[in-house]
Image 1 (cartoon, rainbow, N blue to C red):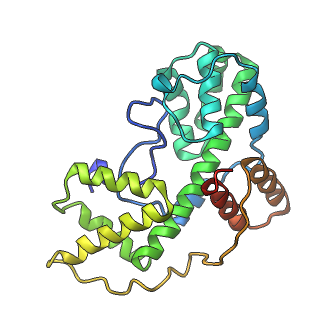
Image 2 (image 1 turned 45 degrees about the horizontal axis):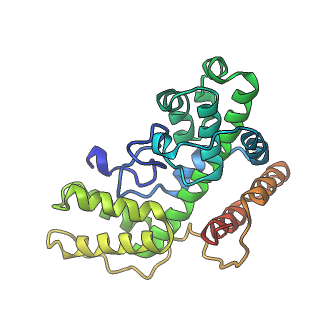
Length: 258
């Protein structure tokens, strides 16, 4: 696939925003891929938010962009108010957040930029932000796999997109829909599947009622806040419990605006 079409959720902010996680459309990360990098359930979102409240200046979203995450924006705000620049934030945090690997942050350089106390808080917030992204990626993978009848079907569609006549602008629009998750991602995946099936050179995919066996289809109504999410993740980690239901509950919380 072209470089612009390889991954659906590597970008969390716009192209103009320095702290980004790439924009590459059309591919939804698999649950297995998202699980390769463990989340940090000890991330203390409250600590980040409490500290940011002490800062006077609000985040300049025109210069820094909007991560669509309270924790993500809090991290940027701390760097901004400590005198850092968007380019410095990108250099220090981009790979760590993208790969959910805080060891990729140069803490010495970060400390030099914002001070030791802020550096510790920023690393905690970056880890919490990466946790949010990992959970969202899993939910998008579930939605897309279900829409096209399984991960094998989605892989076939992705591979076809590479040589298809779909314009770059249309790919960007599909990427935006896929990255939104939920009904928008389902619509985009279905539309791409229809285009795949309309190509006479492809073997038709008709088994779209099958749910990928790796996807948890249990329906639950619980929706939780970010604060409760991190608290439950920490407890589940200590007990060695599965965190799938916690992530799903937080996804519903985001959709509910809490």
